[in-house]
Amino acid sequence: MSDNPSFVLKKVNTVEFEQRPIPDIGPYDVLVEVRKTGICGSDVHYLVHGRIGDYVLESDRDMVLGHESSGVIAKVGPLVTNHKPGDRVAIEPGATCKSCDACKEGRYELCPYIKFAATPPYDGTLGRYYAVPSDLVYTLPPQLTLEDGAMIEPLSVAVHAVIKLGALKINQSIAVFGCGPVGLLCMAVAKAIGASRIVAVDVVPQRLEFAKSYAATDVFYPPPQQGEANMAFSKRAAAAMKAELNIEDGSGIDLVVDASSAEVAIQTGIRIAKRGGTYVQVGAGRPEITIDMGLVLFKELTVKGSFRYGPGDYPLAISLAAHGKVDLKPLVSHRFPFLDARHAFETTRNGKGEDGRGVIKAIISGPDVRVDDL
Image (cartoon, rainbow, N blue to C red; front, side):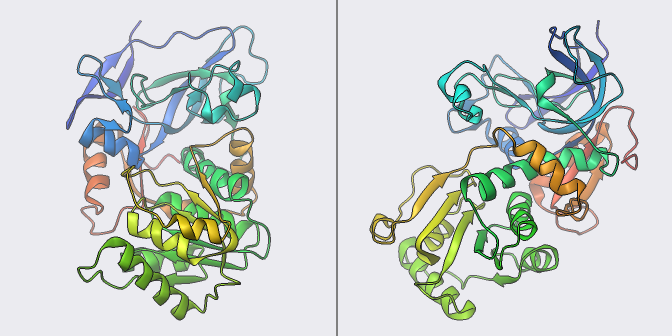
């Protein structure tokens, strides 16, 4: 049985539309007809480089792209009791083993056996149908659109970084390096829980303007790097940031989140964190970087890596959006029909659409779904 048009990465910079078999489902699974899919930076990275860290697209194994998706349940397994056909759902795209130590400890994002959509060798969601365990789809309340549902995935990344790992509390401050979708959503989550100060940092002025209109209370545009080494520049940038924004060493930033993965941003972020503060790394970039471990030691910083999302993050993300605490709609800058998926990826890669607008988040509709059908 085959009626499952899919957008497939064949090799680096080579994608094709293919008919794939409709996935079989087990007794506890659901089959989702995918309606909306957002393009993530990781999708583009696989297209351009064929790998992220140790996850490598093998030459003999192509892969369906996409993992930020929502849709409508088309079929449920015989033992599924929490969902029914016709339910509008957000898809959490990582099926775990449920039996390893990480899963049993409630940190299933660290499961070594996770089958994550569009991470080699597992297919993603950019097709008509996607099969997933029933506990990994979440019913969307009426006030959220399917487009909102596709945005729940990156919002869950932000929830995990800011609330679960960063433990940000009401009336505390946060600085976010990188004003892409995840960085912006980290700011939105911080605003939703009552942060006293939300500082956005980026090297693109237009992104800072958007961040200020969306969730940031303050913005910082770093000075140009003038030939000095990254570590020296980070010292100068941190000093400029502290002076411009009146950040004192003793009462500095409670939580610093890096969503850029730039080495100088990471170095600067550690310098502007307060004594006893927390630093969370969300952006995934070059693994070999230099940091001032003396600062980490002398400040007694808590430094954490943030990987995707874990138990409770999706429901909290949906609740924040459903109650109007986080507005997802302004982040969707470009929309494409399914057959224009190539163009959608090119637009995201270029960072600007034919309309001249910068890309924040591009959404691809499912096969036979109208772009304006939200």
